[in-house]
Image (cartoon, rainbow, N blue to C red):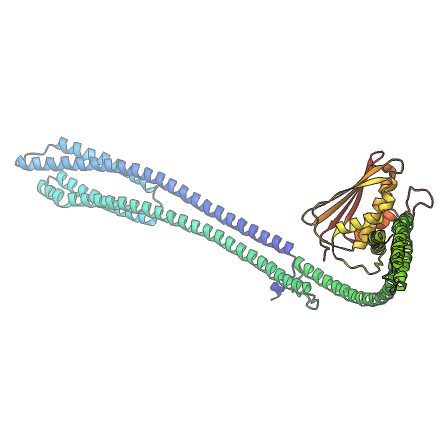
Length: 585
């Protein structure tokens, strides 16, 4: 537990260094073991090489021994043949020289074998080899002793006994001797195979040990890395869960990590951040409450100010209406002379006609009075002559023709006065609360032209090029004032010569356009940007208020339209009025 606690409180960097050092130690140990096993394998290989060399030396000496043994066998074979020849020759005297030659050869061969045995014995390494070699030596000495006994019998002249001993004792001893050598050879072969198997087993063990060390190192490295990664991921998961809670506004769940590493420092930073965020949130809430109080206060102040603003706006609206009415009155005052002339003409001939009618009626009433007085004397010639004289004096026939004509003229004059008065009423209508209704713009233009006819007719001709216009939503009396201001200004631009004012109308899918052009003096370029400014005028003092085009621009803007101007000094001016067919909701 203490070790785990100690590990848990290490820095991640320290843990990684420890894991790296541990892996490095494992690799060093593995390399040392590998080097040791490689040394063991090298020693085994050297032993195998040395054993092979020893086996070669042993084989070489063994071949020499076998050659010597072959010589002994050949000598013995010659001796056996000599004995057999001796027996076949019916026991003739032995050729002593022949036996001496044979036994001398045996003696020489035996001496050579003795030297070879001593050399061969020095090459033996294991107890089994020495035991087998002792068996060979024992078999050899048995063979040599038996053979010596046979030689002694031959030397004593006991040829039969020597012959029997040669067949029964010497030859079996020789076979035993040769068999012991074969056992020695098999032992050497089996030991060589066992040594090879042992070295192969050592190699397998060494390889398994190296692989085991590598596997152990890999497993321990994996365990160490898994432990570190698991610690990091679990800590980061807890930090992530707490961060989600912080994002939801829950700062009362601190991150608890039982460690003293970088992640613990990160968790502590998160906890500090959460505390600061909570403090900031509380401070923000306090500020919010204070701000809400301030907003409430400001709202009350704004409400009061808004009420005052509404009152002021109402006053401004009233002032605007009064200003509009003033402009209308100014326009009417400008047109007063023309209107008076227009009214005076029909009133004059109506007045004259009524005077004439009064005289006619007096004469008619006189004739009627005579008729009433002469009713009783109607049959007398004098009465008839008097009546005819009265008719001629009253011009009764002419009165019958002229009185209806006078009445018609008077009626037409009165209708003209009525139209003029109606046009003035339409133009001067009070629009304190204007209402947008469907209206015909052409009717408004015609009504305005009738009002300004006397003002314009002396300066320009009116050319109407009307297109096909639909009814539009508008306040027609306000548009009439716009038309009047523009047309009157156009007539004023042609004081020096008789000109032409052209009114064109057109429509598209959503708007209509009214273009009012004149071929007057035009507007200077430096004045074009100011003509819609209030109180700006180029007319002499007392000839204009400078509000006509400004009010016209405001009226068109209130209709969600556009009022633009194009002018070229000396060639004329065109005002374009673009209005929507339907007012936006």
